[in-house]
Image (tube, rainbow, N blue to C red; front, side):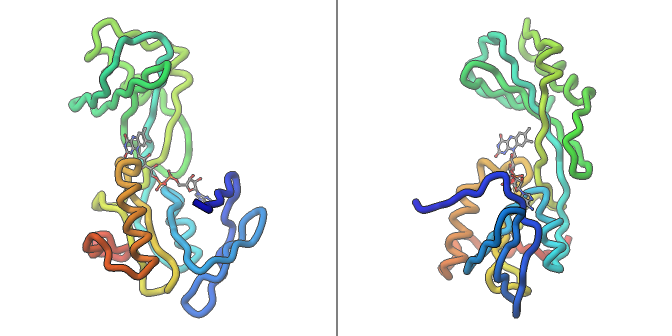
Length: 204
Ligand SMILES: Cc1cc2nc3c(=O)[nH]c(=O)nc-3n(C[C@H](O)[C@H](O)[C@H](O)COP(=O)(O)OP(=O)(O)OC[C@H]3O[C@@H](n4cnc5c(N)ncnc54)[C@H](O)[C@@H]3O)c2cc1C
């Protein structure tokens, strides 16, 4: 499709001229473009600040434990009371959950890891989650907005900057819909949805 992904490359600065972004300066190169999309997840406020835009968004840390031994779990589930998601993967079972509002960091809180493991064991009789699996738990940062809705669309400050961030717990599910909206915005088509509820500078 002609897309180039520059992995392991950090946007360090943004050059602006006359209400337009002209280029990104990364740690490896300068990138010129006609249109830019802000999709930096929990890091979006840091980059927005460089552009003079105050964005209310915080990381909501979630954890996952991958269990390698056979669990006989074949059906994906959400353990509603425990707020734990269970996903049979290829060769292991994944248990994930918790929402820890904090600053940007990837510190693992063992209390939260144990809470996921313990509640999963209450639902699945005989499920054993080893200390080794718990010690290998990892976390991710969900970009959380005050009202739980993402930020999608342009602001008045820049002609060529579209926001697509803040999808909190639903980014994988909502990504394709947001992608469609972003393509409509950039190509000046009528968006499939009214974007008012997703405005970056909406009041809370
Ligand atoms: C445990 C867990 C379970 C989840 N389960 C689900 C689920 O079942 N279904 C679902 O829909 N969602 C789920 N989510 C939520 C989903 O992961 C997020 O909504 C989604 O990752 C948000 O996507 P994003 O692209 O906006 O942000 P991110 O995935 O955070 O991506 C932002 C990217 O921007 C990069 N970046 C930041 N700053 C810079 C910079 N200066 N230069 C270059 N790059 C930069 C970051 O490195 C990162 O790669 C889960 C999240 C967690 C933590």
